[in-house]
Length: 193
Image (cartoon, rainbow, N blue to C red; front, side, top):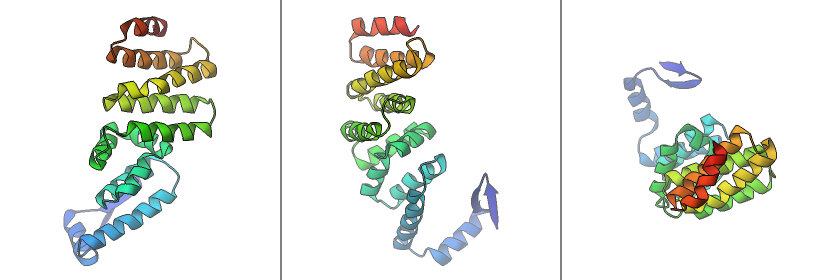
């Protein structure tokens, strides 16, 4: 009665799913307990696309607000969730009621995460992804210092004329345009081109 879909076991039909649910998950409290148990398992695993698909969803379904917030502030997990589905990531912040205040805790978490890694390309990439998400949330101004850091790291890692530097310059110019600072954005766009 089970089907393997790319390594994920699932019920072959909804009737079987309903029968198992009726037999083993009699009420909402039992469902919450099982989801939290599964969340514990996924949280103990390294951040991967699979764990970052399951963990936040389980915490959201179990209404574990503090754990979900902690999960979203884990930058390795944040980046994997963002890579997979930016809209879902925003959905979790909206559900937490922090979509307008999330920039400061995210930036603080990012800075702590970045200290352990130094000026490596992965930090520049992470800064760039964080800024893309903050821009998606309409929090462009808060992302500018991170984008400047991403440009600096990319230049040190790849040299001034690398395509990754151009991408960072373009993202920074986009933020400057959105914050109505066109004279600052133009030379960055020219350099990116």
